[in-house]
Length: 200
Image (tube, rainbow, N blue to C red; front, side):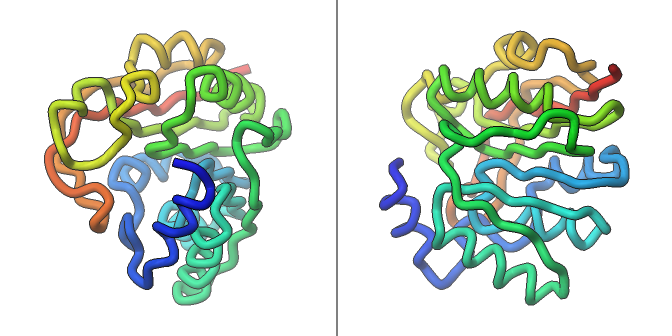
């Protein structure tokens, strides 16, 4: 989807993917050391706001101004502040060695852009920092519960092992689970989940 399509989607008054964090992010949030967190393709801000309520200084990046406006409103409603950055991840630079946590949920990018973003994420973490990812796998094409229809945009554990080389994989699994996140993701889904740490 292009920027206009995302802006149209996020223009709806309801939060398309809900106001609560992704369940895997919520489960793994305690693994993020104290410090700043970067949320990629963050949309309406549900993960960023949750992490801010845990005391992190959070920067949310997305290409949709409509999504980021809703993220700021959600933060205000929860009594926290987040920084928002309007950017296409194809042109965004992750500052090296800065982040205690980097989070990407359902950030389905073209392969060349995805590989570059993931390589930057590896470099962007501080020592001890963690990368948290959940995304749909090709098996998701058998479900009609969300996600892209193009196989090249979907991710596998094997592919992510290569793309995140240099990080220690603490959690790496492909599973089926009930994904209930607003109207955007509802029902059985096939996902890959990653928790990886930079040790050096």
